[in-house]
Length: 387
Image 1: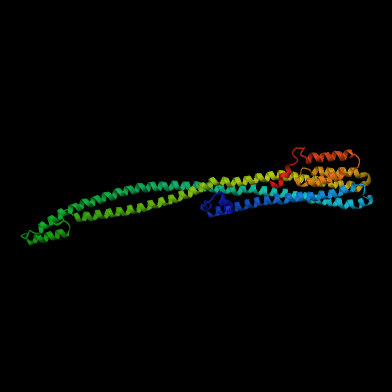
Image 2: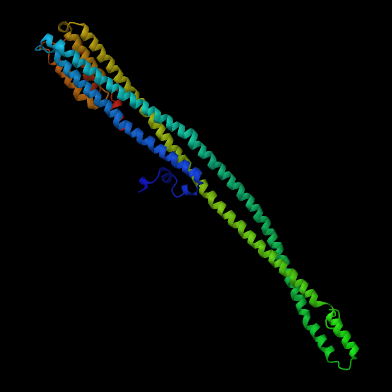
């Protein structure tokens, strides 16, 4: 399946192998790193964000336990003995939530930095090198084409030369029958003195006698030799021309593939930019999650310090308000926390048999507003897990 192919083969199918080994290897590295970054971002969303919400849910369970301390059926001494342990557990859970969120934010920031580095150094460098390769290849093709043009002119000139030499050979060969007839006539004149015959034989042997009075055999041999030499030069010229055309065709095939790769590189840049944009978007979501976790931790520590210093019996209403404020800050972080927040709110508000104190009533209303979505923008972090 295509999804199982390396990233580079999916982005530039069938073309990556036409690249030099070094660039192909570096492109493979880019694909591997980008895949690792994408996987890391996914894991950060799945684990860091989810673990942060899980720890917040655990912390709110501790807050719910602390909410039980304001009931009238608790002995004050028993409350004083247990509340410190429960509040410390809540503080520890909020600390863990803050750490998980901080780890997620750091991880996303690192993935973002790696993606930017990948684009600005590796991908940009490869893009420049491929552009230079395309330019060099195009220049080589122009140079080869010039050599082909020159070789073509030379081939045509040699073709003309061979044709002229061949025609000269044919012309000389056409004269040989006449020369042979003259020689035969000399042979039948039996009454020529022997000296004349000897003279004729000697003259023929020298190529200038009556047998070959115009030296046609020698001219024919020389012309044939010139024709053969011209033909050999023409054959060599044809071979050179075919070789140059083969080199040009190979370069053009390579250039075509390189241009396709060059045109496909924006896809790789697009993958990098998409990952970078995703990291930026996640940073804007993780940052509020981390800030909310830190704020909850501060509120929990304030509650812990105030509860330690105050007389709990006289501090119960303020303690209830503080617990509800923690729930109010937690509302809107993630839908997973809604049930825990409602349990704390309901447990506190049902404790009072008479009318709720003003502070408790107002804090309870604020929670309901947030949980019911009356305050815009409070559910943005709820999308973090699926980002």
